[in-house]
Length: 155
Image 1 (spheres, rainbow, N blue to C red):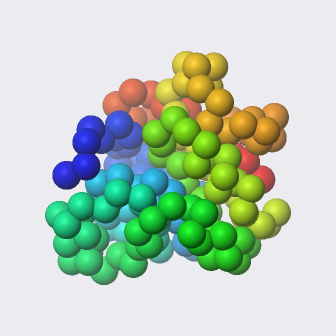
Image 2 (cartoon, rainbow, N blue to C red):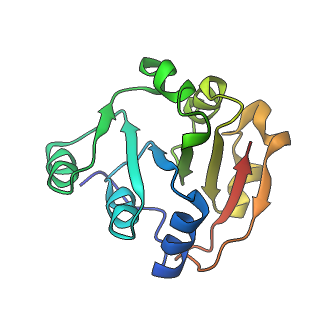
């Protein structure tokens, strides 16, 4: 599997994310091991995602769970991201710290919401959201996670 799994939500938080999505496709940007997408799908969510580094084991696990995904950089799929509109919910769950979050947000349609999940100190340590940080609002969902991450909504 790919590296360390950083975001480890409990069942209640997973169910809250699915409820919050309210039928929208949860599009996990930088899905890593794919475990989160599998867990969300098992809770009833419609999921897909994009990951630059997809290992064979991850590909096999996602395929076996019936999850369609895109390998590559967000810059390869601007039309897909833009066309999610109000039918999709972008999800950045403890992403690697780089410009890819801001780059993806540059492509999103104004009707597409994004959730950025991180530990509170990362909001100060890293500039993942770039110019979108001023638009991010913390939201509360039921449940918790191993590292007590916070969830920021960017509309």
